[in-house]
Image (cartoon, rainbow, N blue to C red; front, side):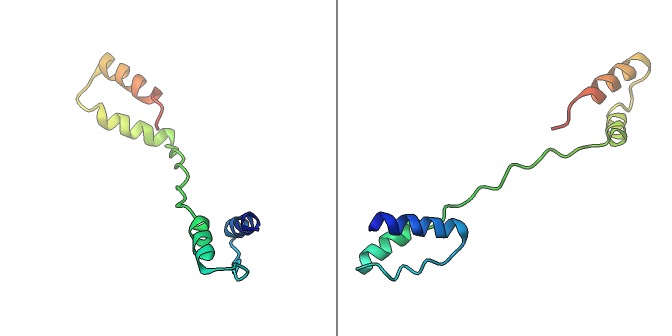
Length: 86
């Protein structure tokens, strides 16, 4: 009987329903069941990486390349633009 109540309480918790454990025989059982049914803290889903447009990436790399000229700037821009943003 206790297992049936616990399963019902867990199911109701996940569905967001109020079980009203009035059928419990004594208050100790009710308080133990309530503690066991307490919803666990849910972790937020991981954030998706923000997509940066190619134009924004070009601006950022260009700012970082200030002071570089010629082949050095070209090589830097090539590596900077090819990096994956996480």
